[in-house]
Amino acid sequence: MNQALRAAMADRGETAESLAEQVGVDPKTIARWITPGRTPHPRHRAAAAAALGREVEDLWPDVFKRREPAWLRPWVETELQATALRAFQVAVIPGLLQTPEYASAVLSSGLLGPDEVGDYVETRLRRQAAVLDRRKPPLFIAVIDEFALRRGDPDLMRPQLDHLVAMAQRPNVLLHVLPLDAGIHAGQAGPFVIATTDDGDVAYLDDQAAGRLTNDTAALWSVWDTLRSVALPRRQTIDFLKARSWLT
Image (cartoon, rainbow, N blue to C red):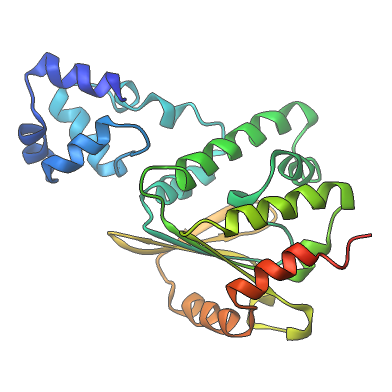
């Protein structure tokens, strides 16, 4: 329950209907903002805060407690608004599907100091819950290159693969492994995620230094369709993850 929002509405004498009219949304949307797991779009948060005479961070403090780098925050906001997420990864397991131990290993291998890794792992786990465990989670489709499944110590990868199998049982999660015998493919240029929102499609592209967002998604959709066409179907992917024949 968002008690801060509820209290602010009561103080101003606003109902779901009256606040909805000022913000430009349906009253049912306001009601969902009060319940757990639903964070408004940034522009709606700003409009609601203005209507209630409060600061945005006072009404949605959890949004501002996250410790992800500033360049990542626009994408985190987009994830929360997405009705569908389509992710391709060639080198690592997608962040939304990582176990804490795997996330720690991945983050430790980069530029973060030892004292920073724990905070970033905690932030990643909160993102997972906020996106995939909310009341109406998005459709999440992930194509994962087999290389990513083979990279890592067996003791690290066994529980990570178990987690992937468990996540793949969820009705809103579709996993597809891109097998090695697919050869050189359209995704070789790097990982990406396409988010479908009420405002259109937004893509996230990652590199060594930072990530960036783009609304120019036409080329990525073409790559995505190609990758899906050569990846294993969902059932075969689950069987492949369970077999894990490459682990010793």
